[in-house]
Length: 171
Image (cartoon, rainbow, N blue to C red):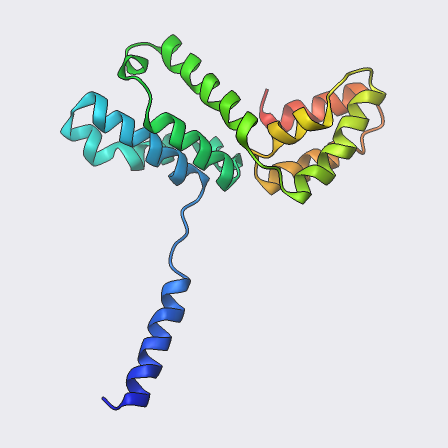
């Protein structure tokens, strides 16, 4: 193969490689979870099936932003193995990881813009949600979630707003 043909082939390979699969939020979160599970549970079944089972069993993780999933996954990867002994310990650890992720996340401009309106909407309903707290909380969610919440803000009453937000999060 000549120099030009080799360069063209390499360019095509590099271009195709740039379109390689980018992991979604569920895959990122499950990477961290499975690192801990493999470290703590020492089971061949866990090692072989953890990631696929995790992604399939937690469809709600797609609601996270890649940043939120990454922060959560990193926290989960280093959990103390006792969290696998009870649901209560697991739930408490996930909550701790979530709160830590909220504190260290950097909100995008989209999140900042969203929170300016979202905080105002709740203030009009008699609730106080500081913009900074909103930014930390919602920096962890995917843009599609924010879009659904923007639609909620157009509701006519506070009860409709509350109901719409609960519907977005399935609560």
